[in-house]
Image: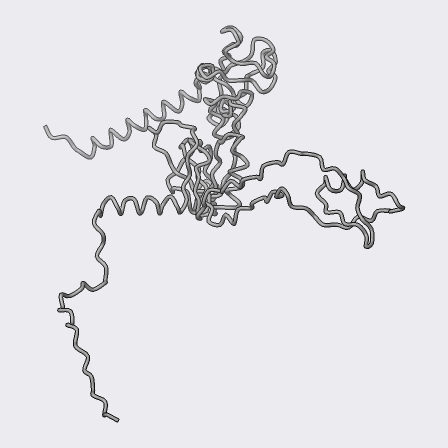
Length: 359
């Protein structure tokens, strides 16, 4: 039995259209029901989710007539989101009153879905903060929110280290004491000036009184501690495992959509919003303004470490360079100096004397 293939295709299309129409009509006549979370009693700011009982919340069923109205749920806490944030012990940052729906913006938690729009809602550690660091062509192109990175600063010009010279013991300043001599010099003043390190000289024609020198302990001469050698540039990792919360890009108007909305084209990365410890804020700011801040994208399998690094300098590079050179090439490298040839040494010749004429 031959079946008209064209009629079969038309039948399938009509069935799809009928099923879609029935789904749309059913959604309009009987829209889906969602659950939102409301507070059973007042919840003050600072309360942790784990400190609340299970009956502290009520689940309120709500029905929205269309998709636009259902967008309200994006700002209201739902039961599954409440369970996720309780696992990481979210904290209320605003007061929630009795029978009031709980807004996502009222809770700080690493699992808060609203942190995509409001980044600080994910800062559940008070010692962490978000900074925006410029890209400066040092950011991997495919970096995305949620990635973990290391931040390192490279400084090309450090400048000379300043050494504070301490006063050397035994060095005195020579001054002439203007003493009102009237027959009896002031022995106490002379002794005081000498103790302060001055060489006291009497006016012309006068003599200083004899002052008994007191035995005082001479402090040891300070020994200068040599500063470690520094050869620029220097590089140092200042933040480990920082989380990217937002990637900022250049935006330009690409045109208009069929619905009349603006079509935005994203360009180059301009900055990253990154979560860092507050203790590293000054170093990151200094690095972004006085050096080159390098971003290193970590593997998803990387272990979170927070240990200081030794840093690297040009001298470290040279040390490794010569060490590897010596290890890989134990014999000396050939030089351009010509090898000596086995030429016979010249034999000494006897001196030829010329007889002098006799007188």
